[in-house]
Length: 314
Image 1 (tube, rainbow, N blue to C red):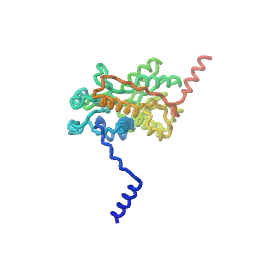
Image 2: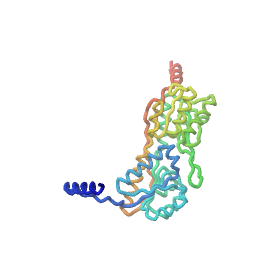
Image 3: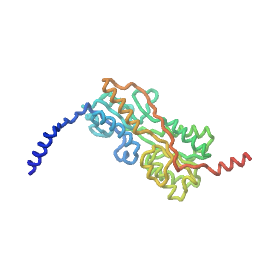
Image 4: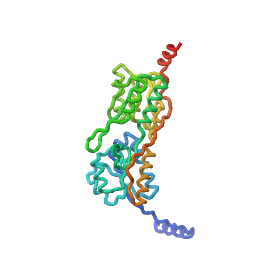
């Protein structure tokens, strides 16, 4: 019966002059090396968006993608057929040197190399992003600002402190804001966001506004505030960083700094791909991508402060 059906299908295809197109073979194979685990990617969609940007562009150009984790036992044996490497996340200089020995065509994403910039790296403009955050809170009349950040580690256990913190402190100082006692740093997870916010609530000294350095931290912080019957934005404003889809499902749409993670992945893949086509390697360069503020419903004016300002000017 099956042979009869197959024969009928083939005869119909012949009458319709149907031609089976041969499947295109990949032009080359590129490797994506992740310093973070699958579980960390699930918990923080920023990393997922970054990887998807890379993969979608490469697949559109018939480039096969080999996904590798930095702690794979046979890591360097995986590069025998690789024509390009994209590193996602934080890697030690020594680790990068070893990768270059395996493949010269290499691009770093979300890792900043400064003094000297020895490789092609693409990062976000964190300094300008934090200026937008503090400027916005200042316009709303907030004087006490909190910062919920995260700490990351490279493969050699080198600790990477969030560079946004120093920019945050700089711009708060420009406006003479209170911020020192409202800074907390832990992991980039919703659990950490919840715990950091609970600790701040229990101190009985809340700031006027909170900046959360990632979507998961913001989701956890918002849950802690709501569990403690603290109204957002009536009692406190909160702004997050990333603008990944997950925060669209929160009880309150969060004002955010949009981080173009997907676009960063696309740009890094293009840089690697065109270097491959030209039979060359990317020149050492540092590319910064801009972030921008999206206003939603989690921030409001500090009415008490504005009222005092109006009284003082009567």
